[in-house]
Length: 167
Image (cartoon, rainbow, N blue to C red):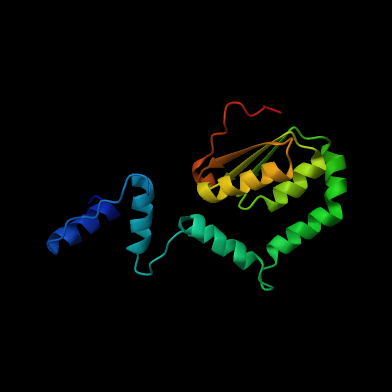
């Protein structure tokens, strides 16, 4: 007995109800992503990966959450950079390239790139529009830094731009 895909199951339910299956625009999600979303929503206890919440507005909401007293990871990361940043920079030495998966608003990147005197920064984030805005602010804050945005889902692999130095 072969397993029926979530997409086929949904199409069958819609057909039974006399409804046409929805056709989301191609740029909303790939077929694999749509399948993952539908599979999660069709579970007895519906579930959706949080990565699908990170569009422009979702990223803004997450940034607001990180400023709440109850959310400690961001404050902890900044405290570690303040307390140990110079030791990290000394141990690493001048870094030509800093790559940050899940770069978000690039606040930590600004601190780290300045500490290690990076010449290049590549921020990777699923929310490409939000990341592009953050990279623009980073370029203003660190004018000599060649900063790039790569919109990608880090769980599916990331391809860096070919002109990023191999160092």
